[in-house]
Length: 302
Image (tube, rainbow, N blue to C red; front, side, top):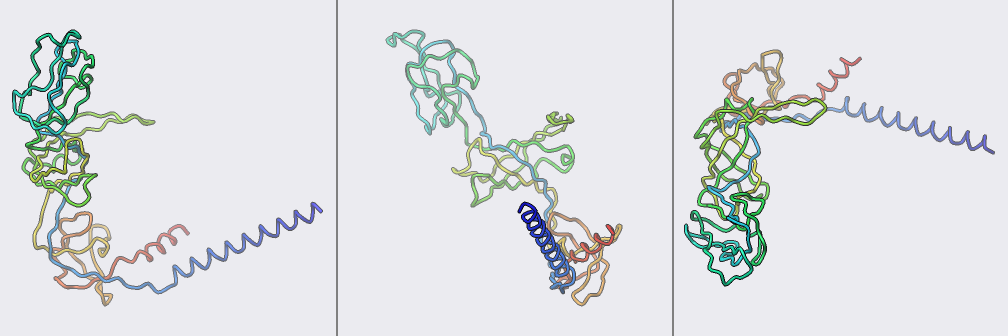
């Protein structure tokens, strides 16, 4: 009986293996021998933008943490979140004893700003910790201007200049993008050591970008992605990267009728390449034959 079960199991495994081989063979034959539908692209004139993309964080023009100047109890908080303060407005008063009848003088706003956090409540005991966020009672920001702090890898820093235009996309705001301009570039890098099986050190240069079209939606602390426009060409001939062939240092295309045409290229970005010679606006070219690439790779392996 056991022998019969063993034979049946072997037979089932053998049949399954044969079916898998047949399926692989049919898929391969279909992929390699089927006639490929040609995809045609058109040379067009347009704008080509080269950019450096990095991550950053939105920060206010100024920010301060209101803390206790001495140990004591919070007697009164004069503000609430969202209040817009003028320099000198009272924010909080601290009493060193529980006898709140004692006369105390309030801590006042050091500049015009908005209350964005209230971390403590009236009657709570607080410790003197001048200017530190650890024992913050109230945080206020000057949001009359907003900036993005970001770090540029050293490989890209030579492309970055003060005054360059920046496109800003906030992770939490999907329906619009913002514009900005680079206002500061650090003259020295910050070294960062990554913890991995082999410690490596990277150098990044801090930059500051001012958001020129801020609104009430974008807020300090939001994470953003910024595209620094490092080069821009207007009204140039463009062709998608997927239509270009390259052999050594030469570039060429195949026209719609199959004729090969050598081209001279200019600047490129992640989508398009500038065509300087060899094609005209409206020329139609074939997309790169990726199936032929698969065949060639297979021949190399054999």
